Every structure is written in structure tokens, then in C-alpha cells.
Image 1 (spheres, helix red, strand yellow):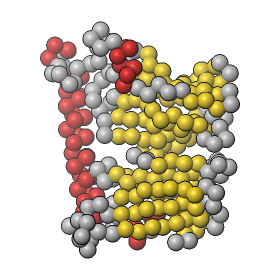
Image 2 (spheres, helix red, strand yellow):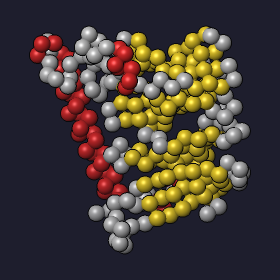
Image 3 (cartoon, one colour):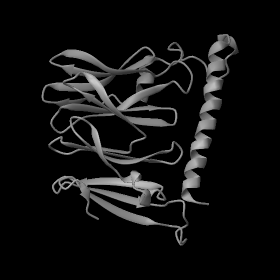
Length: 243
């Protein structure tokens, strides 16, 4: 079976599961509370205290030159907070402990960009994780990258590199974007020669401004002729593939 067939199968399976669970979640939010089965009940702060619930959330604070960011929990909701000069701004919010399993989610992995222009954070939920970027000067979320497993700025904040390879979700990309316009100038999976690869690991040589893409095919057996590996390098200075 071709690797692209595995991608299609993964997408179809995920779509089917989402439809079933979403439908079940809708049903259980319509019936009377006493008829809701375990696993779909509304979150009850009387049964599970807010303090216990906080253990589920990454509350690590990150600091950059007078700015601070953290996750705050109030009732069933989680908030990404940006504190500038003791003034708190709500960057993002999610229902963490209420509703059905599909709608729940939280935040983690907060970080500031090298020069402090952006705040990055992950939003997680049922079978999902997305990387988000918040522009501190504009006071708005400017980008979201679903299923990203790599997101790095160059030290001068002129480029952003983000990658994903999620067979089940069907998200595949290895993007280079210019800043501050977030214009995409390269994506490794828009090259037809890379479509057969299922796994992507990314790294960046910040000193030489080179992005390295490590591609592999983990569906092939170790000794199988179908097993493939490939390395591609992209120069940020030349804005072109050099290997």
C-alpha cells in the first residue's frame, strides 16, 4: 500500500471518530443530567475541586523584560494571560472542564520570541494540539499552526519555521515564513518529490541560517525497499534549497 494511501486512511478514520464523538457529545448535553453517563457529564467543581483541576494545566510563568505570561484557571475556564506593567490582558481562553470531551481544552508551552515581539503557546484538546502566535504590539492572535511539532523564530525575528507531520490528522507541512507579514516563502511538502514521506523532523542552524528537514518513511519495515530517508536543507539567506 502506498504511503499516500495511509494518509488518506488516517484522515478518513479521524473524520469518522470526530463525527461519532461529536454526535455523542451533542446527545449527552441535551439529555437530563441524571441520564448522562459517566465520561460525558458536565464538569462539577463540587466533585473535583478547582485546586485538583489545576494539576491538569501547565501554570509555568514566562518572563521577558517587564512582560510576563501564564495560564490562569477560573471555574471551568482556562485563560492565557499577558501581564504588561501589572496590567493583565486575556490573550486566549478555553472551556477546560465543562461541556463534552471534544470541546474541552487547555493551554501550555508558553514562550516569548527572541526579541519579545510575540508570545507563543500551545492549545490542546481531544486528539489536537495547535501552536499559536500572539502579536504583543497589535494585541491580537496572528497565526495558528495545527499539529505543529516544531516552531522556531530566528534570533532577528525575520523568519519563522514551523513543521508538522501528523498522519491521523492529515497535517503535513514544513514552512518558512517571513516576519512580520507571516508570508510563506517555502513549504517542503509543496514539492511533489516529498509527498511519499510520512515523518518530518525539523531543526535550524541559527548561526548559518539554514533549516534542515529530516524526512523518513516509518511505515516501511526496516529492511523493506519501501523504507526511505531524505535530508533537505533550505538557506534563509539565499531563500532557496541548497541540498
